[in-house]
Amino acid sequence: MDFTYLNTLAGGYDREQVLHDLIHAYRHDVWDYAFSITRSVDLSDDIAQDVFLKVYEKLHTFRGEASIKSWLLRITRNVSFNRMKSGFFRRVLLMGEMREAGAGAPSAEKQAMDRLQTSEAWQLVLGLPVKQREVLVLHAHHELTQEEIAKLLHLPLGTVKSRLHHARLKLAERYRGGMKHEGV
Image (cartoon, rainbow, N blue to C red; front, side, top):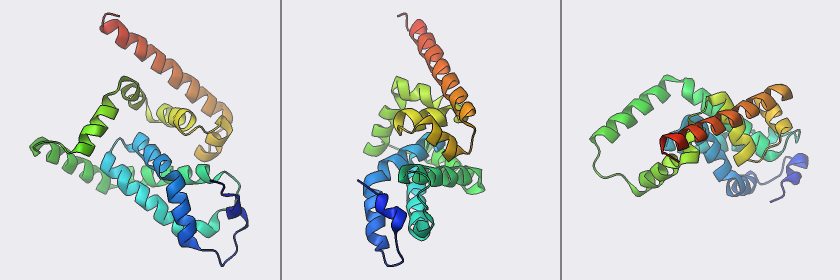
């Protein structure tokens, strides 16, 4: 979907239609990025809703200096990290752990997410330090260029390249280590 028209929006645009188009085009990217930061399905659902509420409120602030995807991912990152800093986040995680400990059969959604989380590659990525995991997910999954990642994270390009390089090295090392333990 082409969102270049957002660069020239006037005051009379249909915000509901623009929001609908953005949600349709980017809801999975926003949710996936929130999940890669928080590692929580429920929190990622909440964050995705918060992101699109912020977009609805602040649509007029989009200046077109970055792609719409980069803009949405920057908002997602900010909302995710703000949520993780809050006491609310810690309480939600604790309550989630308590519910799971006393729960009966897991839901179909939980089972699907458990399968996703237990896939070897995803487990390895989620095991990376957050700074390396973040650049790797933005580059490999969201297909942002290193320059776009640097702008989104407010980092020098060299730092992004370094983090991406170290993330790849650590993944390769962990993958080889896991294969040795399995006797391959």
